[in-house]
Amino acid sequence: MKSKFKILLATVAGTAIVMGCASAPNAVNFDKLAADVAKASFSDKGIAKVSILNADETNRACSEADVAGKPLDDARAKAIEKANFATIKWPSDGKFLGDWKEGEKIAQSGKGMTWSDEAGEVNGGNCYNCHQISKQEISFGTIGPSLYNYGKLRGVSDPNSAASKAIVEYTWGKVWNSRAYNACSDMPRAGHNGVLTENQVRNVLALLLDPKSPVNQ
Image (cartoon, rainbow, N blue to C red; front, side):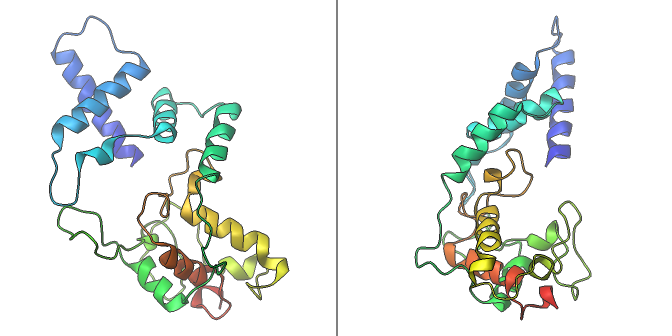
């Protein structure tokens, strides 16, 4: 995502030069130019709407920091994490884990939320695009850390025990809204943005934490 954004910025910069700008725009104006070019380049098609480009405060802050080439200051980062943490929706029935087999299907699937998808279709999580998860899967991305033995390495022998509560809750929160723990995380805010449903998040947690899951073998 960042590399595509930088390519877009380079395109905007070239456009500004061709137009004969007297001076280079500052980082904030440059970011606005990039956003304007992006919006002008897209149109509503099927369920994919241009409104997806409308950034919330979290994305705006992280985008500005990326353009400026420096991290957010600690105070702003903490404020963003606190605001995102407040949006986490915890399991309505108190059950954090579902079916790891269904979780594997979700991790494998990149389907959903494109113009060619139908409204109401089940989305995938596309987790393998960024992470190693199951040892049996040999095709995976490395943008994110390996999640193989995720639960085992964290000592989760019984996800329902009091001893495992903290890591189970953290994992739920991280999948639901990653920015609650890292203000400018590259990880999609799967639950927060409606990519995954509550039950899908349960199944992904089972994949990561259930001792019977191949992830923890």
